[in-house]
Amino acid sequence: MSNGDAVRTALFRRALHRIGRRGASLAFVGLLGEVIAASLVFAPPSQRATSGYTTLASVAPLNVWALAWFLVGTLCLVQMFMRSDRMAFAAATALLLLYGLVHMVSTVTGANQRGWVAGAVWLAFGSWIALIATWPEAPRPPGRLPGALPPAAAVVVADSAGIIQSWNLQAADLFGWSTEEAVGRPLTMLMPRRLREQHSAGLLRVSSSGRSELAGRIIPLVGLRRDGTEFPIALTVNAWHHEDGIAYTGVIRPVGGGGDAEPD
Figure 1 (cartoon, one colour):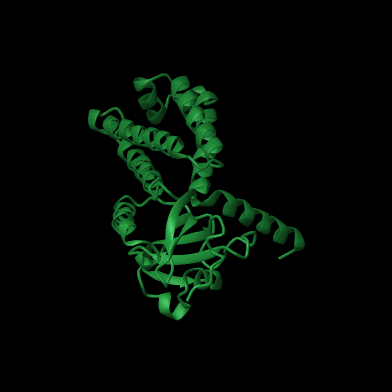
Figure 2 (cartoon, rainbow, N blue to C red):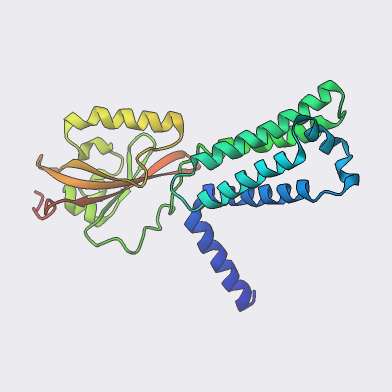
């Protein structure tokens, strides 16, 4: 691989890492939407006379379809860089499924005998986008934690059941449990008893919906040390998918000097 290819590959990976899997999917749909919009506007008369185009024109003018694709494509390209991208996913899914249904109906009515082929493709594409919309996005995979984190930040990785899989030395110093003692035990050991039921309910919601409403937000909470003392913390949590399901990375910082005390 030449130096130029290596640079282009590195830039591509950096861009993909920045926008994540959801953003990459929106980029694909957004570019596709702009291409389809152009093909509808600038299609020659011979192409407009084909069964696929006449099917669309029987529902709405081709310029209307083109405008819909242009707007959805633009929305996807804009929201691929934003934290909130639900509107783009909803609009893209709706348009793709509508496209598929129009072609399927054209087969049933006899307007386009082979419309079911295009219909099946568009419906599958729309279902795929709807599935991606349920993915929680992880800005970084496990083991590649941000280098900009201050040394005092405790980092805890847990599985979908809330069982600790790993944590760093700062977490051990902050809570008073060694890595060997903490790994394999539930996260609830790090929180007061009054907060544990709420935590368990939150894990169930994420498992059923596939997304975390708290991902990326700074959450003020109360931590529990090994010696039973409580202290205020600020938690930032991210959910990510891997082969065994959803897992969580939590970055914990003591608030107001709460981490200065030495654990027993």
